[in-house]
Image (cartoon, rainbow, N blue to C red; front, side, top):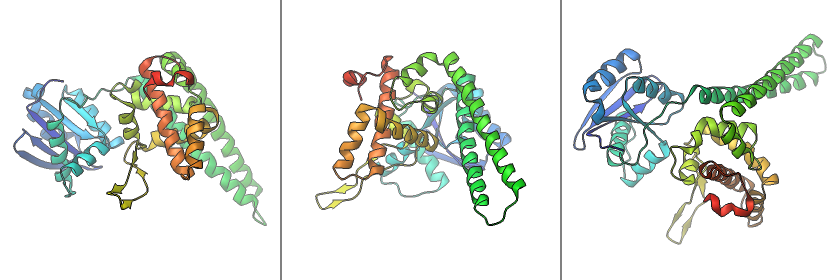
Length: 331
């Protein structure tokens, strides 16, 4: 990546933006409302003539950062979206404790300036990838609704007296949701086979990865194009274990960061449940951890971690999964 003279660190909130314009020496701080008019005035117009020497850096904050990144990229500006966990560790490394929007913007700008040769430029997702992302999330939402509807049906049925009309309505609603899920899953399968056939086949070669996990990885990671290692991918999701130790006397329970992509983490856990039964490498690891005294939750997190590493391996190597040649996947 080329060098940038100026880094604009952006702290993105629901209704406001805090920015720090940093040239390597001084910060210029601004805060304004998250509106197109304000963004045009404060972020786009001032940098149009010098856009080749400026990069905008922001944290991945779910839906809030995405809209801003697309707006700025549509103006031909350089954008980088970084994992919040990386910014947190950068703050810890520099012993920074102040937590305000402007302080966060300064921190992001300083990180972007110091590591500008390592960060990746943001790339918009293609229409097919966005469609996969939308569909897989719609399926997940409908599954939650079906569970709620089924619970309401069962709760009503256990009452001493209940309305049969209400009971029929809950049952009809559950069936409608079930049919919608089947319709979306069928469409998702066709979309993956048409637009992402090679990636989908590679991912499905891994025991434990089915339609939802494959779709999530394709939608979220885009073939791990912006990840240099499986460890980075695990950190992005928030399933990289963090030991808690100090000297020889303080040894706390290890934990994982939950600042990563929560939806991806949820889908990976579902895949890990299947993998602990059908994936030989993950099953062995899971059993070993449980037998050594680790909790089932810790062992399941490790399973999700390993499953994502296997996915990283097959997509980066372009070869189907083979448990006998696991070293070839660099996992």
